[in-house]
Length: 455
Image: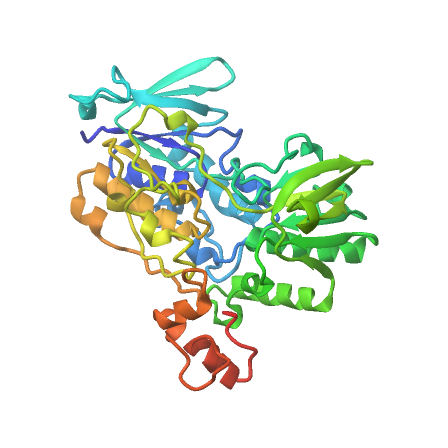
C-alpha cells in the first residue's frame, strides 16, 4: 500500500498541491491535465487579481518541493494576478520539481470506473483498482490507479444565462454574441468590446470585476457602455463587506464598484431574469419575462457571469454521494450552502466531508463545492492535505485541522441580512443604532464610515 498510485485529474493549483502531498506521503501521483500546460484554467483569467495575498495561495507541501530548486517565494503580503500565479508558482512547481515527471498534459479524462466492476456490482468492489480512460491526441489511453482525486474544477462548465438553471431560449443560437466567466475585456478581448454596448449578467465578483473593467475601457474607447443585468432587486448586496471584509482586496473591489454604480457610469437593470435571447439586425436582444410584464435591452455583446457548475459526465460509473441541490458531497453541502452561508465562516474540512460511497475517490477544489460559489484556494489546499493523509492511512492527520480561514464580515445568511445578524454573523444584532443591520455595521457607522456593507 505504500506504493499506492493516485490519479489526480487537473493540474491547477489544487491538483498540483494534491500531487505534492501525495508525493510527500510516499505514494505515486499521476496528474492528468486536459490543457497543454499546467494551470490551463487559470490562463483563461490571468488578467484578474486575486482577492487573497500570496500567503494564502501557496500550498505548504508545494513550497517544500520548490525550496531545493532555488525558487524565490513571492512577497506573502502582495496580491498576485492569475498570470503571476502561473509564472511565479504554478509553472516552476510543474516544471522544476519532481512533479514534472508525473504530469501528463493534453490528457482529457473521458471516463472512470473500477476494473471489472460496473456501478451496480458491489462485492469486492473496494479491492479493484480504478480504470481511468483519457484522450491525449494519440487515441484512447487507459490508466489504472489505487485512488483518484478529481480536482478538475468548474471553469469550463459555466452556468447559462437563464434564471431557472436552463439556457435561455435562443441562448445556443446566439452563442456568437455571448461570452462566459470573466473575459479580458481590456486585453485579449479589447477589439470585441471596445466601443460596444455590453451587458453583464450576474452579481458575483466575476460580474463586478468585469463591469469595472468595462468602465475603464469606456474611458479609453468612447462609445463603450456597460449594462448590469441583475436578477435580484437590490444591487447593494453585490457591494460586499467593504472595509469590514477580512480579505481587503475583495472589500476594496466592492467599494469601488458601489462608487461606479452611484456615479451612473454603469446602467443597472434590476429584477432582470433572462428568459429569451435573439439576434436583431446584427445585435442581441435580451428579454426578461414575457407578455405585458416583459422588458428587454438591445446590446452588442453579453457576458454571462452567473457562476459555474461541476461536470459529472465522466464519473457516471462511480458511486457518488451528492447533495441534490448544491451538487457537493453530502457532508460538505450544509457547510457551504449559499442559501445559508455567505459569511466566509465555512469551517475547514477534509477527507471525512469529501468522501463518497466509492472508497478511494475524492473530489477536491472548486469542483467539490458543486454549485456553491464561496470556494477559497487555501480551502482546497487543506482538503488535499487531509485526503493525502487519509490515503496514506494517517487517520489522525486526516482529521486534524491545519487551516484558519479569514472571516469576510459579509452578513448574508439565508438571503436576509437581518437574519444573519440575529444568528451571530458580523457580531450579532445592533444594540443602539436602528438603521444598522448588525453590530459590525453599527460600529462602522459610529466610526464615520457608511457601514460594513451588509445592507
